[in-house]
Length: 126
Image (cartoon, rainbow, N blue to C red; front, side):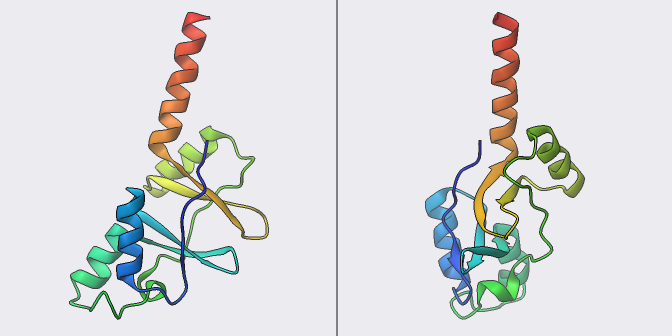
């Protein structure tokens, strides 16, 4: 249900993160250090904390504008719990993280909704 995302490392520029987002057609670039999630930079972070403040995206490092107070889920959490967390924190997706902090994926609201709707359709026709 979740996909293993491409990531950026501490020290990468905001331009690197934006290129990753463009290539992945995503609004988020997870930041990892030694395989562990340390933050995420979103398209909104870049807009508000870089562009609107007139900072140079080539010189601005992802860790300088990243969101660090992260809401995550573990791989065994129920999809309903993930959706509830997304609703509560007004986010479109959540990093999926092992107990040791290793990033194993991202679960997106749209993917969960499609999965739930498919299950409901199957039960209707069963």
